[in-house]
Length: 337
Figure 1 (spheres, rainbow, N blue to C red):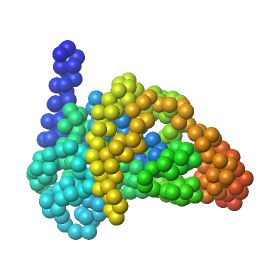
Figure 2: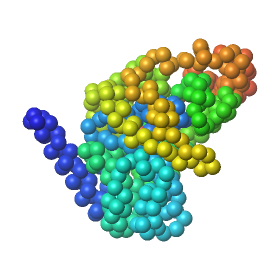
Figure 3: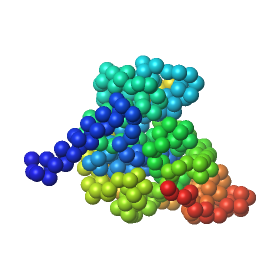
Figure 4: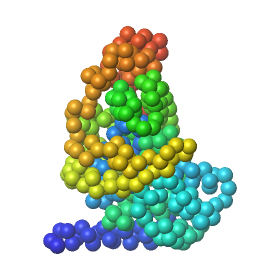
């Protein structure tokens, strides 16, 4: 092992030990934590893989249980075992490939037990397993939970990735879950983005990036994101696809679903197949070739105003009518802090 690699490994281990000491004393996060969120199929996995490639940062697959744990502490006093159960009993637990006894023991060592400490215990355990000193999260739905998460985890830095909703709808309709029509997809996309943007002024650390810009200027966008999350840019992030298959393999398990058959491992992996490749420009504006004029009109009749607000051009009279009715015009993203 060369001297530079030896020094880097030593620094990583030193950082992990520091984080561990902090965890069992006064909990203090090891740094700003990016929370990648947005409407599903907008590029959250792509951003996760890029950030996770950084030598200091580990981002697990989707957690989903963080708001549930916070709510439990908001309702009543929770024991260490109560907190551990929320995490370990969640259907996503198997995606993290952590030792349940280790996580439980780590939470039991906290005094007092708080939602923040329990959540950080999980993230730090995951980061250590990856040989990293810092953690983050990638769960699309947390775009609706930013206020709740911020109250408990002030280190959270919300990175909201937005993609042309018409391209998102093409992806939605080929999944075995979610919207089944273009109108349904449009409502989901419009409502979640509008809710997030309405919430943004009350969020201490919030930024928006666009999928289209990430594809066109990957390095430039990543520099901005790194500045936002207080992380030095590392060129290895541009080669994220070289280890994407290994990182996504965590999802190679059947996922239980309420009132529906389990989602097969193959389907879960297939849904992220393109994330194993470098950014592709042909993933931008696909709707122009793949949607009929009637389908475009169906979508834009619901979300035309939001498309215009975000700077996307319309392609139907129905969309123009929707935008005119709502008085839509381009609106800048919420301030980044």
